[in-house]
Length: 411
Length: 97
Image (tube, rainbow over all chains, first blue to last red; front, side):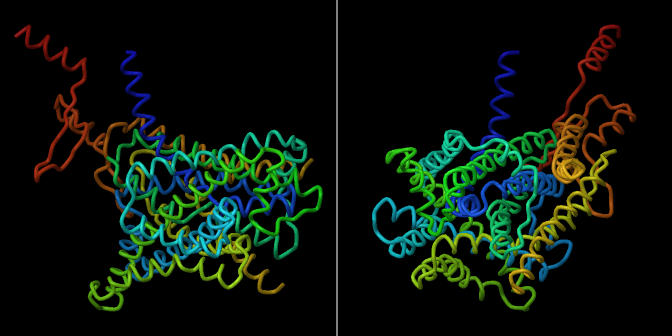
């Protein structure tokens, strides 16, 4: 009996742990940039977005896992089967675009953190970081390096106790979480889009669906899959909310709006000391590096599929386009170094790139909802409410995007 | 006050309930078809599971239930399970014979 319990705990952990690790590794410089800016510029008033993002992320991951488990196919394979190669190419292009945007944000942010540690300009570090990511993505990394980076990325969780020791006003936090506050300004709307973009990453749709598709398809494992995704998303949201709370408590009351990414970290120096700050910077860099590598790998895989779809649409041999995969994938990594070299601020780059990622997210999300609507569950399982909710969430994210785009153009 | 209630309701309907409902579906599927593998799923036709096929086998008078089907080395491997009570019944029948 004791052995059976032990086996069940170990089996559960095997399912839950990767989801938690994937969630925490997803945190990076773009989170630090977006949430610290949101806290310093708008106080606690954007905390409600963390709450919304948490529910949306968990729900979308549940849906993708269900699709993968039930159809035994990944998202792009499903789109290709139901809507043809040209639509699959469109979805692949949208996901690749969100990846490029987020990779640029992470490289920019990661370079700033390296520059804090070394005193050398981020413009110097950005191409080196991009090159390392390219090498890791193309050749793969040893499991030891991966494990060390993963372990280091967990340091970011230290933001949660830091937020507590800043003694934030609890009533304002509760108000921030429960009262969606919309300010009529372009900067505010872009910040909301950046929060959504950095938190709901489209490549995770692919990752979750193909992971579930590769597994045995056992219904008994679906709850464990959900539990892992939920715990991972809760940890990420806690860290994101903590970053926002720290800056809202320390900077917003003094009217100090973050203008550079390093300010977000350096503001904590008097509170935590040099050693903790150095550890935190290393942790954030490791996390940024890991998530960028995962996205770069995901981009190479998407390009493989995109090439096949394009070849079919253009009626040419896939081998002719195959050479472009590495070129396009590598060019995507150069966006950030080039932008930093021409003088774009890493903070602005991270926020705008995250907002751009949000802009492309509704495309895969709409097809995710379409495929989920087509899905029939065995037996007497009623899924109408979940299907309606899926469309509601897709529409909400799409409306925020359309509104943000129109608002940005008009004002 | 009304505004607060409306906000809370929105969070519940669009946030908490769908996630919780999905979880409930997963639990129901696990309870009903746990250990079973989906063998067919398409948009226009209903998915069937091995578990659903079990019942028909039982009606036909077979003692074993199919727990899993896997394709391995060009062959189909069936994992068969027999209920403790059915096994006891079979053994007692054999003893009486």
